[in-house]
Image 1: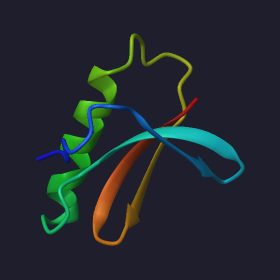
Image 2: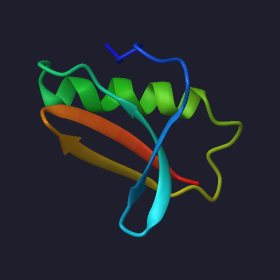
Image 3: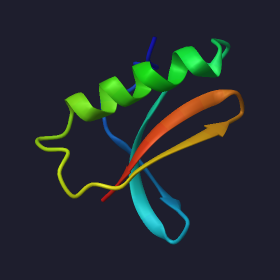
Length: 68
């Protein structure tokens, strides 16, 4: 499941550019976190065209990211 502790989009600097991300549920296997996190992230976007997506694991939580 997705971390729903905040309804606001979370942003951070990643490789010199800003990304918005959705975190997976820490403690779950990464192969389960990744698809759920990307589904939640993609649901927030009006279109997937011309977007750059990234995935990263930080402290056991998968983050599905999109450059903004």
